[in-house]
Length: 307
Picture 1 (tube, rainbow, N blue to C red):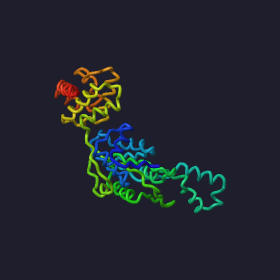
Picture 2: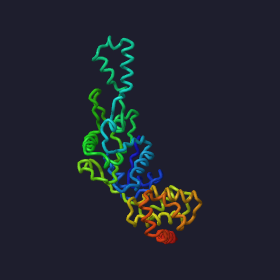
Picture 3: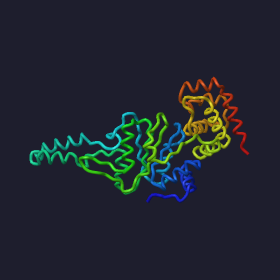
Picture 4: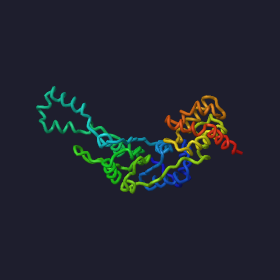
């Protein structure tokens, strides 16, 4: 049975228990999405935790996570359903070899080929056709990468939560899935699709919340190191980088430093591990030009605020 929270506090506690620390605004958006049965559209820079939120909701709800990764040119055959042509061909050859094809006739044989056993159910149809009766979490990731035609089709699906396969019939969700859409805003998504959803802009976490996230996800990192890493990342985000580090990079950096036995960062450590947190050569060069010492100084200043 799906878990229906009674308040935003319930949502915050449930997400935290599953490893995700949400701010009040995001917890409210999740609560309303679950309570109203509306898709949740999450927009924000890459790495702020949009995809991870969907994974966490699936763990919390003990539901299957069905992920549809969008890309340019995606269409219904990749997102909704397709036919298993190789199995259909094998069935046709077997029917011919056994003589069934000549006995059944062309029309009957064609009807066998478009049976549900040859239907490949992609992410959207799997989310709608819930064989076990449990509503899954449907993650439509990076919808901004898809084109207008796919957006229009998705709008129709999210309106009725049903899919028609002409050769078989209509599949309709007994219970609408929990739907999370994410966008890194590489382009604007049409208003019509957003109107079907509740909307939330996901910010980078505050310093204190990022410290708490590091301590939760990397418990082997000491509190001083957690604060210094969060402070250093905060400083990096203040520089005009092509790809500012997200929460995932913060966690990776803290994990790497902990694995190296580092308890406090310094310029040498930052220089040696910069590739853990910055994934573009141009960004690393920009940080070096800015001065690694300044990054370390801000990290130390933030670290010393404790107590």
